[in-house]
Length: 429
Image (cartoon, rainbow, N blue to C red; front, side, top):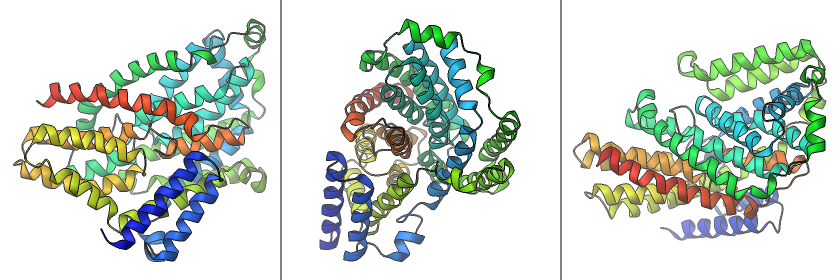
């Protein structure tokens, strides 16, 4: 690598340490790191703002912005309070069954939608449930975001890296259902068991609070029935358009922002008040992080790491599969998995072709997908959904620290990837 590439690595590592130690606000660190990358020439305006591979992913930014506007309007209807009371009553006020309900719903919905969209919708309900029952919301939020990353791995459209892999490899929606969904179901069951152990201190049962919740009528929580109907119609249309985006030729980001602006117009609410619900610091943090990771892509750092790792095992399919699986999980915990998968895809394609294009060689694509998807759970900045939930929690007064998330994330990631090892062996070898 060039001297500039090493300097870019140093800047990224320093920024990552500051984010992890939380000595300085993470938004300031991300913007500072991005500014340094631009100043030293590791990236430039052309790459930072306009490159799909090495710049800000505007699709992610505008997808988040559109969904945040929709959630901002929904908050004013009372629908989240309705769902919170309903779920608490279904579980009879018992915290662990409530967590199981929220985790399963989040995982299933994340398989059909973008996992960031899912956590944006589920997190407000979770905060209200926990407030009603007097239990700490942080374990519930952490469990949900991890479930969203696990569930998103199940389908071609559930996680952006899967879409990249599908387009590069020719693997279809059905292929993902056949290979990824059984693994995700196994991991999800194990994950629920882990939640019972990891978050056991959060499952406090307050009989008095539960009695008050059981006495509530969900319907009384709805403040604006007209706006509930309008919001659900618009949200439903957005979700349908998400699933049909390849037919409609509209990016999910365009669908989300159109839906958000349409709902804002139909709601007759004050636009400035709704805009205050948008997690602006989270969007700015993403922009800075994208520029820093993009600098590593632009200077060839990611490509050098990937080629060194895969070049060492060419022609040895099982060692290549294991290296790709674990390296992808490790690197996706540190850098965003979208540019990582975009960089690795042509290399994996070469390895598959080197194996003569055998069906068994497709295991390399699945190793890349599993490692990138599950690796996002390892750290607080490993996946977009993680960062979004940290922002929502912070805004609600429940700060989730980097290590507060990561100490659970590392356990979940190692166990999830370890489960994938025998699964891939039995399935392909």
